[in-house]
Image 1 (tube, rainbow, N blue to C red):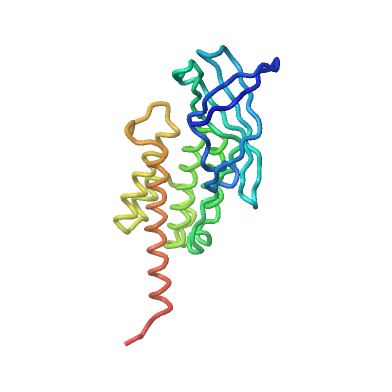
Image 2: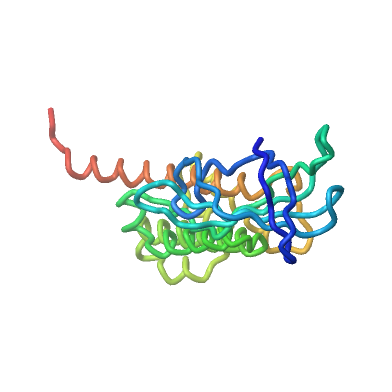
Length: 230
């Protein structure tokens, strides 16, 4: 916890206690102990209110200034408001890296997936799942076309569920992709079916799907390049 002075809009000093200091820079995503630069306070004192704190990243290659938002949590023994960290901004989206095999198979998948992460970074939660669902469709259809080039036009037009059912031959790939599609569809529908799963489950299932696709591609690669070894 950190006791500091905050300034109201009329220039009044208010003593507050910050329960947390951000330990990761939202711009460079590196763990740091940021330097506090300025604190503003708004709202009733001491029983309510909110604070915004300007921090500067101490990482040499970053040093960006970001804002941490706090809200009233409780008062301490001296009747000083204790403020709880709620968010930091601006947030730079994390870029997910994929293997050369996946990037070459479906560059559109990589692009759409990272655009979904960018939406998540700016708190556009309602768009994240939709983007991930679209990314999954590009991945599975590009993979199906790769494995069955003569069926390209048919694959392009068919629903994702049918593409997975008809063209995902590996049982692990089929199981993971099917469940990722279920959760992805939930993100586009008015009523959710899978209420105990969330966007993190969808991300994990897509990552598992990617892994199984990559396994197939790598197996094909080494079978083609390493023959007649006996």
